[in-house]
Length: 179
Image 1 (cartoon, rainbow, N blue to C red):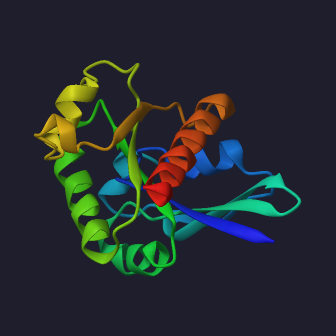
Image 2 (cartoon, rainbow, N blue to C red):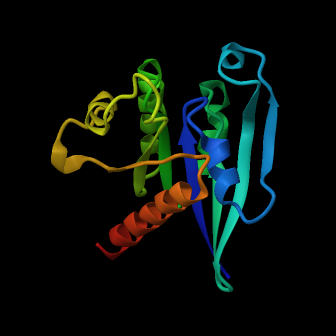
């Protein structure tokens, strides 16, 4: 059986754990614990190592989804998880521009370690103060229009929305592997 390893990364509260829980066909393995730092202002629990979910495409093909912690103090897990990955999605909460710098740091971290396909998943686009796709791309440092990753709006709480994002990521992966 072939396993495709996809990473779901992003800042704290961008929706990584929820994304994986919405699509996984197995009970998600997580390492959530009570938030004790500034993360507690956003949510009660936080991922400290990883989330793991699986999506079976056929008897011979499964997608393994690994969610990273959002806090940079756990960046050693980012390093462990991104190796051997085929592609990743960076989730960015569109309504929290104060976190775009951290999202940019996560992006740089990943790109220093691997050269694999990636897309941006824009979450919380329905919230007050949400930035447009164009503005988020510029904030993340993608100035040249011809050198931008695919971007998709995703609601991590909705299975269909998450499925669409996973399909786009896999399509992007397949296009890059053919090229």
